[in-house]
Length: 432
Image (cartoon, rainbow, N blue to C red; front, side, top):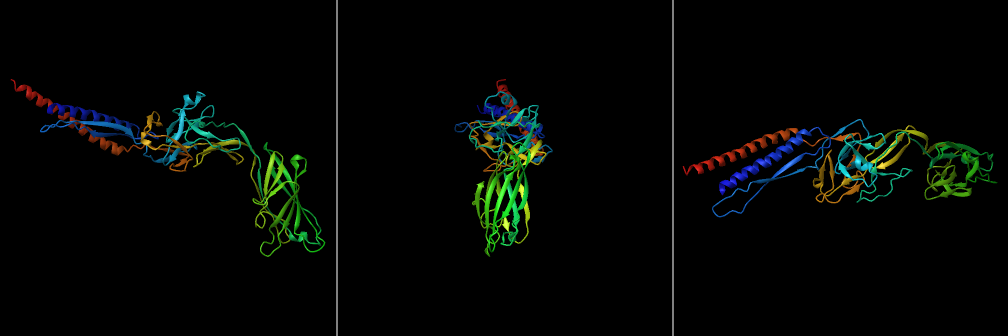
């Protein structure tokens, strides 16, 4: 019985070392495979119930798995949509077959991928993995999607032959009005300013702004009437405001109060005027009461100090990029950028419990636990890294060392079997 158990133990030793050799072979073969996670083989001894005075060898068993939580080195590439995760977490992908089915996509996970638009504009790898993300609305805002379900994820598709306009919604107006113009002996001549804005169709339009001082009988009124006309609507008045400036030692020259007259609105909490321009409202920031920002009234100089606005004319899409927060943006030749998708980072309680699939992808399993979709760089997950790929986690030197050890262990177990065979031969020779 003892000799037979030795034979069985030797056989198990051969089997487990053969399994370890297979993991080493896989690791070395994939030492240059981006995103590859090294396979490992762990040995566990088998202990049988022992009778007094006798010992039976139980042998050994093996469990194999992948070290998915290990991270390879990130290397720089020239493709903006070569993606990797700078830390914990996985990128959601699906197969090309699932993406084309028109039904709910089957989510898979990977840590890196080289995604490029195909003929339909879908971002996919050469191996057929399609990038998944949450689509933005037409105005570039990412709606709220469920974080514990993949139902909101869609294949990322970018139409590279598109034009896009960016209408103006905000104007920052930094203008100084001369305080001397509101004195009783001033001429009362208005001060004029022309502003350009972009409409909802990308066309350039013009706002004519006129500042007319209020002339008092004596002293200084420190009061102006601001009128805004929109040439895109035939020159109609879209904003008219009475603006009073402070003349105290502490806050002299700042806005004291703004009163809307025939058109427009003013919010003292934000310091913004609202005017109804062509294609939609525009907010003009002139400053809050007693705030040294926006409109001022000082000295005898009319000076448009800083005029800035958002928006741009119609532009052609030139490239796409993914920032560290996972926001995929379209970049246009006019300098305008627009969010198209958000790529979340998937995390599970036990990364090494994920089920390994082809092409360095993984699936949720009962061992991994339930997944959660994080914003990149938030919570426990790392940031999204563009222009980068993750290298294989294989250490070739370490694998070759283990190869030598495995070879010796296999030979030693074979020697045990040979020895048991010789002992059994001697036992059969006793009868002779």
